[in-house]
Length: 211
Image (cartoon, rainbow, N blue to C red; front, side, top):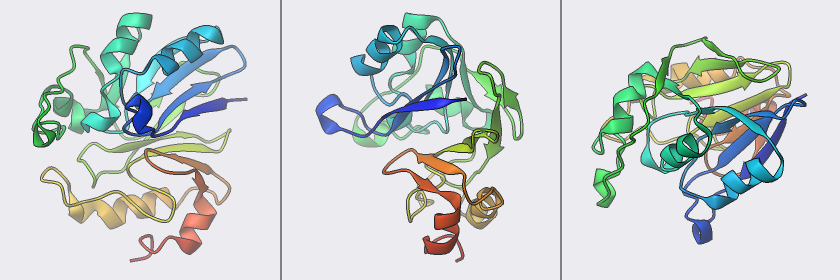
């Protein structure tokens, strides 16, 4: 069985988006979208004697990647991102930090993944589901047996991610949302911003799903 510890957006701690620590019964864990250099994430891992296996990035925007280098330094773990968002980890214009007067450039080298790759590490592999539109390489990570989806900025509670950034691919929006909606109704969605939801509720109540 896989469990989740959520670190939600909180300006007091500079958490710019939701981050999740996903761990199994053997205390192996993935970190999804470390959004800042937040001690609470590292402390939680150490205090609970978890064994990090990697960092899963849903996309390259700077508000989802700012804590990557610190975690890599602390635990010497690999980083995974879709191949179409790889360059954004090292280019402030692509990851949008340049727009906010920042220069976020990772020093850690990432591993490129593709649609339907499986990332090993926990008792269940993380399935990569490519959902481009918010960014070209946006993905969700799916644990089918545990009925969990880490959706990044591809799907929110009653909403979806923006598709009007200069690097967005708006023409892929409907296709990507439709792909997510093929999942079972009872899959729990852990989004990059906001509260959890489930696929069935979003299928029926999200005004952006059936546009």
